[in-house]
Image 1: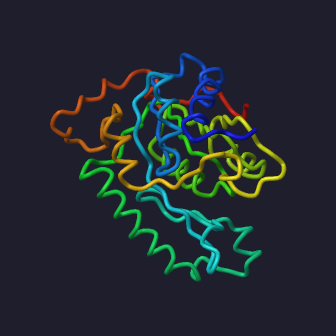
Image 2: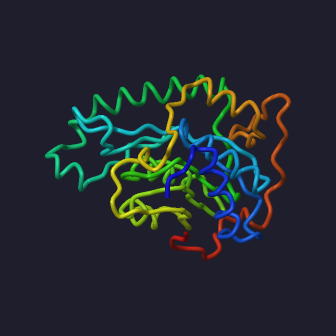
Amino acid sequence: MIFANRDAAGRALAEQVARQVPADAGPFVVLALPRGGLPVAVPVARRLGADLDIVIARKIGAPGRSEYGVGAIAEDGPPIFDQDALRYLGLSEEDLAGTVAAERAELARRTVRYRAGRPAPDVTGRSVVLVDDGLATGVTARAALRWLRAQRPYRLVLAVPVCSPEARDLLADDADLVVYLHAPERFCAVGQWYADFGQLDDSDVERALGQATRVPARSGEQPPGERRQAETTEAARHVRRPLRGRHR
């Protein structure tokens, strides 16, 4: 299965999410992992009639192999490391302190640019669908899921067009449900499953967010012009309904 581009993958994924997630799980909020997850998330949010926002995360790459994720950070959460990968490479968490600091700085830069002073979205008591364009090791999505779980969402779903079987299985305990379209056994990189996997930049993120219905902020002060989130409902008692496992 080869996707034409991220938009096409998002449209196909949107239908799968709509089939797999119970209709009574709403109100939904769709959160993308930018940059690549955002164009995938746009059709998902449209299909669900959901607000769209982002969770900003950064991969912690191995020394000399930055594309190989051995850890990740999300928003203001702590670093999450793949302990098996660290042991394989003979690394400790302390060895990566400089890399973590550099990724924190880049995460802060993106936060300023993408949010322009607006706080992170408030997902307490809401059903969240976290979307990315694919999972290789899954470590970045794991950091984002754990950060989101700490916000006490009603339900937490991870949705991706393509993933490695290892990443799918790894994240089954971090999400209430993992929705995917393709989990090929021979998985080398996310980009190999797209005909067009062009790199995105900050302006692409800003443009997509500018057209989205945004999630109310976590701050007690509502930004001018933003709608205030509805009063907490029965779903916001933070008791998640049973919904575990993975579906395709």
